[in-house]
Amino acid sequence: MVRTRTVEIVEVGPRDGLQNEPSVFPTAAKVEFIQRAIDAGLRRLEVASFVNPKRVPQMADAEAVLAALDRRPGVHYVGLVLNRRGFDRAAAAGCNEIGMAIVASDTFNQRNQGVSSEQSVADWLDIAKAAHSAGIRPQVTISAAFGCPFEGEVDPARVVELALRAAEGKPHEIAIADTIGVGVPSQVTDLLGRLRAALPDMPLRCHFHNTRNTGLANAYAAVEAGVTTLDASIGGIGGCPFAPAATGNIPTEDLLYMLQRMGVETHVDLDKTVATGRWLQDQLGRNVPGMLVKAGGFPARAA
Ligand code: MG
Image (tube, rainbow, N blue to C red; front, side, top):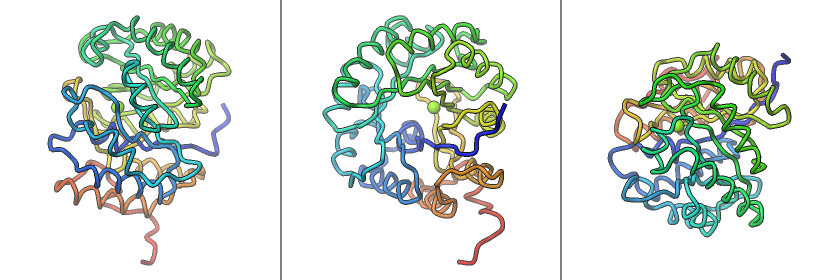
């Protein structure tokens, strides 16, 4: 397989990163977080989720965040939605891309979005249609694609089956997510190979968590398999409120460091991303999991 020379990073810190924070992150700080990431060169950002604020209080200010952003051309402001009501909110708030999730296991889908996986497939197809007619770019993630906290091992054939059905909605891309951070690189290679065989023309994105320290190795495996878009979160913050013991996404700056030293183009500034990780650490008042926030890049650059 030819190694990818350009990788697009989707910054998920403002949504997936912050959603698990116990204390509410102020709206103005969320807006600053997003603007800093854009200043660093990130052009696709998950900025909010349009879900029930009673279930995810951290995202209750989704509309206020969107309203306060200083929009820039060429930037995709992604809203996570889990049903039609969420889509309608994201569209009204001005998201120019929406991401929907379908969980590969029924138990987790019920816990995460209150309906069966089958219902989420139907909801996705309805949302995708509405998004296309509204000029909003839709994409979809198959969550818990590498393992489920409630059902255990997930059959890769189930992931492929869901991806095939999701493809009927003509998404911009399909992502596979290791929501609880149990995957290993050989699994990434295997699952991506199966998806490529089933959907040869569908762009694929990967979303990894570093719960068991395999996140960056999984990202490497995905890049080697030809994936050109990866999710990451500045500082490596994150988790899932409905998955026990789920921890952070792969840190954006750690991923950037690896890719840049491999000669992969990302169009993102490492120093600015590290600085944002340090800023985030100050805002949260505790250490973030990312390593570059502590170590900095190499070779060190003159200040
Ligand atoms: Mg996640």
